[in-house]
Image 1 (cartoon, rainbow, N blue to C red):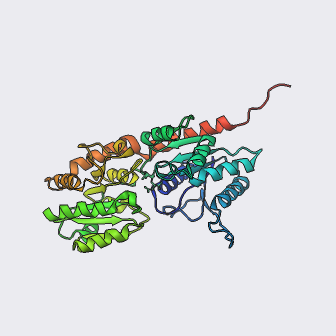
Image 2: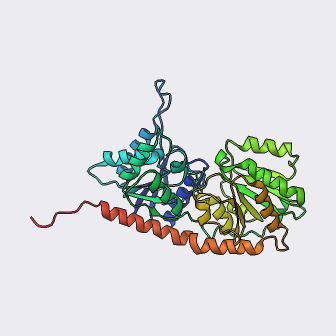
Image 3: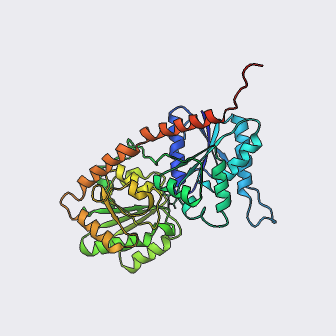
Amino acid sequence: MRIGITCYPTYGGSGVVATELGLELAVRGHEVHFISYAMPIRLSGVNERVWFHEVEVTNYPLFDHPPYTLALATKMTEVAESVSLDLLHVHYAIPHSVSALLARMMAMPRPLPFITTLHGTDITLVGNDRSYLPITRFSIEQSDGVTAISNYLRDRTLKEFEIKRPIEVIPNFVNCDLYQRSSDVDARAKWAPGGEPILMHLSNFRPVKRVTDVVEIFAQVRERIPAKLVMIGDGPDRGAAEHMVRKKKLTRDVFFLGKQGSVQDKLGLADLFLLPSDEESFGLAALEAMACEVPVIASEVGGIREVVTHGDDGYLFEPRDVATAAKYALEILTRPDRGRTMGQRARANARRQYCSNDIIPRYEAYYDKVLNASRPTVAVGK
Ligand code: GMT
């Protein structure tokens, strides 16, 4: 199959899922064409079946906001024509599904079906805004196929957008061969030379992630036991988190790594993963940590409940209740095995439900279904 994939290339779960999906599809023999304004962050090490097509957005003094949606639609049509794409798969509804809808119309009479995958804030925050809701709903209704990354997100979309069409749930996934526990003692010693437990957080540092709560939880843990915190990622709230670390005199114990292309080698060194978000439709970073045998402490919101099982492979707490989160963290880290048993259960649960080997074939089957439904029926006889 020849598949065009569009996503946000910057740091963010939807771009990560789209990129990992494209790479996995390529390994399975498909031809994958990424179409976006920049190379997606995890797209290094491309193989011969993966291409990147950059959308150039021409500016003009008249435009306060250059019309990316239109430039993207044009690029999608060009790529579809030049390499004979079978379908487009767009990640994050706004504005990608609108561009795909335009591209499908421009490509006519040649069929160019498109699938929209909903990731979270495209529905729960941005899509819900009055200025975007009608067009988001329209482009979802017009998509040839729609998937959501959790049952929670599917149900919320159907309800809040009053969508009548079916939405297929294909959950996020992790490459269970790549994401494994690390036994690299030297790498661990760089952060925790005294053998201290390592807490970790990975996100785009947007307000919804509550990165200052991560620091507060860590501070409460650190009051009781020696420990280290590793913060991976970057975004608007990094400054606030760094300021808090300085204020609490924790600079020797907290490491800000910034954006990292490959995270599996770092996650595999952690003893505990913190995800105190206000909202999370899935929580991909938590799943990646779990695959590395890391127990997760996360807020009990949205789709996280489908990923982390309270008391089994981690703990869930009311969002913003940092005292309870710190209590759970201490419970895990002061155990003689430092949560290893919980971590092993985390990997077992991740493997049972979310390994790429099991999830990618579900996307392939869905592509087939959409393609079969969109093929023009040939009149027989006459
Ligand atoms: O979390 C973000 O702010 C980024 C956002 C995105 O679309 O890039 O993440 C969403 O998609 C991820 C991948 O499917 C999910 O794992 C995240 O839970 C979801 N984020 C939210 O719902 C806040």
